[in-house]
Length: 407
Image (tube, rainbow, N blue to C red):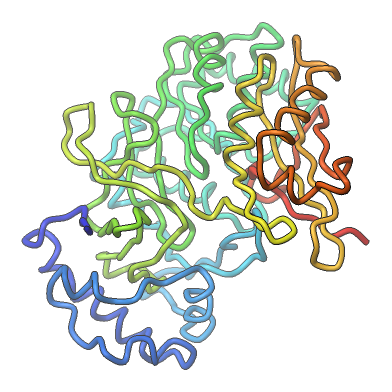
């Protein structure tokens, strides 16, 4: 069973954009053969019949096509790089924010907005958020990265400037609100928390309630390849997104989501592009109609000594422990083979060395991959309490797992 986010009458008049991207993909030497039997995209059934496009496929296409904006600058951004090799993506000036603004009013002219997405190293979110604020006419504090000893001063500045909106990845937002809460600082004027780049984390709800009790979350979903696909508002669950009319979302029988752009200005040839996310189309509790509900990533299974380790399950088990705020798996490889797996834990309160040992033993005994892969060297799996997780310096994202090569 397959499903689309748009009805045939809404989508099919805009399929010439998909047809154009099909023609482009047919010119790519490494991809042309897969599209040999596909010539016309006139119906949604035609789109569903086209082979899906993976990240590596799109990178091959972009390397060949090197798209350019029809007007203004062509911006190059780094696509990927949190857990894989960085690649290049493209966008025109404006970053498609007109379409987002037309359907999502997260900011307004009276807002004082802190843009806390990382500004450097070719990540697009900071510039995207700035372009969105330009449509809203807000005051903008383009902050970017902050070191650990700067939070208190900046939070005091936010209070003085009566900041009403703050945006960033959930990883970065957790640092802001956790630091404020630990210092006993409040942001009484803050009304809006914008987020993009990762799934929302429930720990943020408690910290935001303590620091900024009047603030509500406003989320965007997308990638550097697709750009913004959908948005949600305070009345929507954090995993549900109202998709934009210029984005055609398809749910396959395996629940994998793929995205087809219907925006004629889109530079990336997004045609049934898969991000690795699974989802479904459901009615939103907000009463605003059908939404894309994101069920999580399907590419979070990593190979450890020939066995599949379900990273998200391990992380969830760790974060259910009292006192654990966040966890991360680090896989150390030696000559292509997993030499060790370490579960890093950000913890406080009652979670001490003894609790870490109990969690390690529980995971070893209950997780088939860990118990089997490390049967002869169980010491190669450890649970370690840490002051900080490994983050991407470029984006501020903290991935659930990191792979490292041992020298």
